[in-house]
Image (cartoon, rainbow, N blue to C red; front, side):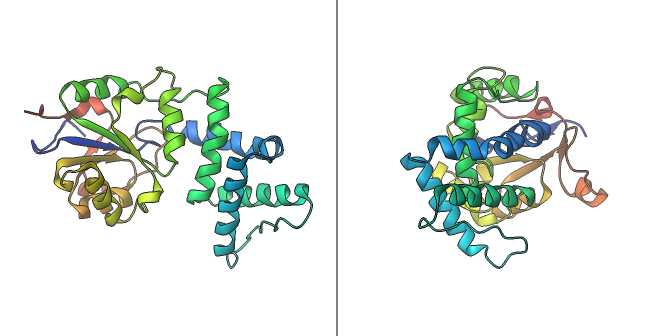
Length: 257
């Protein structure tokens, strides 16, 4: 692993979050446990609010699609006692999280719960030490910076807006989540390029997940795998097929002319 010189045509950097800008431990040991420990109390406190009811309805619609899956936790209809419905939602959320599912409905509820946690100071977003200097350098070089994560756009903005390094949202032109499609499907990356208004060949995508790198590469993007402590180990084949970096400091981008 050494320096990575990016093609001169690259004008945009698209970043994954977990394992790329932010330690996996932050997500696994802080964000996810917060949801599991507080979802019932959150639902009870916000049940009468329109946003909460919309979240529950989206989860119910997702549950209808999941009814054939092993261990499925159904969400009761509104005709029964509220506490029974809430318990059904709690069980469904716990079930989805136990399988590390990334459904849009689950991510939306999580994002709304994290919003309250960040705003109250209970949680602050973590980023690796090399991230902010690199973002600043790339921005000064005229690059456009975007995020593509399985977490909702709102959750992304909370993480960077309430980070240990302060408000980092000024660095980003935009955010994408699974509403554009799966992160392992090349069509999602083409949609992102269309939204940004550039060709896929103008984009560098950084991620720690090989399947995501493959999808982005198939769409025409330049890719690199980010190797961080705690990330999933890569096979020899994966190491041979993709450029590897351990820090954003290793990336050399040409200034936009």
